[in-house]
Amino acid sequence: MSDLVLQLKKINKYFGKTHVIHDVNIDFRKGDFVTFLGPSGCGKTTLLRMVAGFYEPDDGEILLKGERIERIPPYGRNTAMVFQEYALFPHMNVFDNVAYGLHVKNATKEEVKEKVKNALVLMQLEGMEDRFPNQMSGGQQQRVAVARALVMDPDVLLLDEPLSNLDAKLREKVRVELRDIQKKMGLSTIYVTHDQSEALSMSDMIVVLKDGYVHQIGTPQEIYFQPKTPFVADFIGTTNLLDVTGNGKTEVMYQSVKIPMEREVKDGQIYCLSIRPESLFLSFSPLEENVNIRVTVMNQMFLGEKVRYFVQDDFGKEWIIDMFDPGRTILEGELYATFPAEKAWLIEDLKK
Ligand SMILES: Nc1ncnc2c1ncn2[C@@H]1O[C@H](COP(=O)(O)OP(=O)(O)OP(=O)(O)O)[C@@H](O)[C@H]1O
Ligand SMILES: [Mg+2]
Image 1: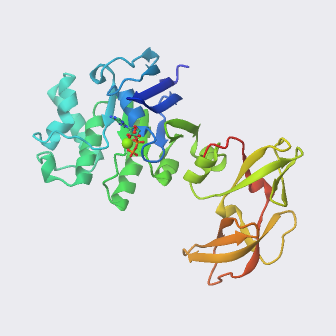
Image 2 (image 1 turned 30 degrees about the horizontal axis):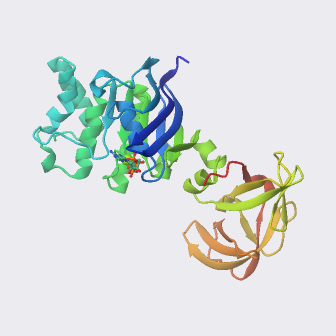
């Protein structure tokens, strides 16, 4: 247990009568970069604010290094949060904004100078010490807010969409550097985003949330390849979801098509299958040892390294199929969507 820095246990939160966080349990290992991922309004900021102490849970426990903290105010716990709306002090210049928390902690002048300088270098803000927030772009202000949290050397660093105002290139650059420094410092971090590629590329663990419920906690690979619910499968990346029924113990039926399963299924039970566009192939004739489904090409999109096909099967369902390294070939008409059965991931929990 000692490698856990933070634990959320059966956390519930209401705003008035609205139940916005439902029985959330999450363990955070020390030094991990954990991402909260989910659509707008799913409760990411609310959870983060409870960890930081700006909201109290109505029910449940929050343990920081083993100690209950859910009733302790923000200044009484060693967390640092960067807000979605970054909240700098408008009357202070960059240096003083970043140094603020250190003064509160009674750091020496030298310490303050050195820590602020390091944080500003890190966030590529050197030379901006004397500027005021209203003299900076949104992206620059956001980086000041991250610097201000970093200097505090918190037990847990809480970042609520901290890069949303940066252009794509700078965002990627700061993201790599942030991850780098986080790893070097062994800084336990919770990062909020609704950008799935950001979550997949940066995280040790991802927590997928929807409507205040945790749908899945796992590594990026687990979340991508072994989604627990249709929602997770669909929200992370692109996928084809099929409603299927258990047929005996070893296969499921999609309409009249039999699909063998490696895992044992229950006869008559309804399941969902997730098949990624990159696991499918369009073929002129059925392929042996594969599942083959007759389809008609409805539309296609040339994307350079691949062509994305939108096809419809004989049962009226639309599929997305990616064909890589396509050259100039564009397929048309009636074909077979074909895939090895082991590429179909079986989902039991049907939460959408
Ligand atoms: N202070 C509040 N009073 C009442 N309802 C609130 C309050 N703050 C948040 N909510 C509601 O709680 C739910 C979760 O909101 P939250 O801000 O945590 O979502 P989020 O996942 O951070 O969304 P976004 O990605 O848009 O920032 C939403 O339905 C929201 O309307
Ligand atoms: Mg939010």
